[in-house]
Length: 589
Image (cartoon, rainbow, N blue to C red; front, side):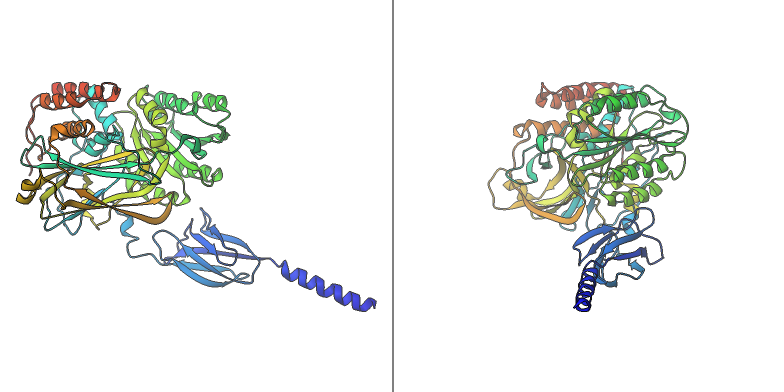
């Protein structure tokens, strides 16, 4: 009897032991050249769980209950692979790059006309400040190339930078003038999306005030505003340049004041860390609850400028800290504040591009705040922001800092969509040719054109306004004042949400809704004044001679008298007129 009981207990022990068996699946993810791949997504079918390869080594270790299981491994830029594995055997998985993986590392376009080839153009530079060399969009024949597209980025750095030059009574470098950023600085024509819609999209056709033979078509995209009571918790890493070049009143002291304004609006659920770089990289403040505002404010106040600028290594440390305190479902973001003058480690736009492109796969966003003058590296900060799934603002004074980090906080730091862009397919029966104003491409992106369009991040409550100058066909001229079933264009809005690479697509129609210019909404007329101001500053070959007084009068007739920024813009026109005098538009080569 005792023997039988012993056998029974032994069998029960074996069953329990087998039921609780644990295996440890280990391995590495590599590319075809045996380079380790960090941040690869590993979906374990049996466990129905997702894991990732290590950020530094590309290796992984997963606790398993099964001796055999299936894995699906995916990584942006590589072909997804599903394999059957034995979980007690070391695994090496090699991912094959997709056909367009290499081209993704090339400079991207922010506007594109399909099937159209481009020639290289002459470029210009601007002293010790660096700007991407831009080529203005051309007039496009609608019958030959009806389809065009543009990125819905909401960067606004160009306007405050232009304002800085003009307030200094200096001409603005041509490549520093990005027309779409000047227009969208003001968030003009915002419309609240209806119901559960993430976006509101509308178009408007009117006459062109600088060329009465042509028309203007406005395309307006408004993003839904986040309910402030439902704003997700924030995990913010301040990455602050404290190098010697920041030792000026409009640099580190301005940034300290800016961040202190931001900290005063933190909630207990928010977390702040600080990484500094100046001579060496340092974790200045470990992750700290927003409830400890006094501690955070005192840490910021103690910052001092000194040393070289090891920006590359500082970026790596900031992302590691952001991952350490990562909030699932939260707003995880590195906020880089600098004049962009990296001089230690990797310093080129291309090298920084590759670093940031890898880091963004972690789900951490990047916002860049530029300051300073004389050595501002605008091109570097653009590169970092765009490849970090983020945005870029230039702080020329404390009022701008308050606008970016307090008044428009959700637009700046809370994204509702990533990789957003708009495709427009014109009706060549009504449109003879068209020109997208602004959204000008970098010279090197045009030279290496692989027909790739770079989408943008859209912040909560943001508004993107694009303007096309259209040469109408005879049919459109005849129909402009009549109701018609025809439409000017078909539009498609594409985007993804919160680092999920699933594409969403919505179709819209640009109706034939012509209204005389004096009768359109005042916000669209004000946007037109800004457009004319920008084109005149650039001395654009596409803009005929119009006096500063005409532009100023147009702005005055539709200004919102309660809006400080709009009133300031009118004063800016007056200042520009004194700097530029009566210079006429430059001629195209």
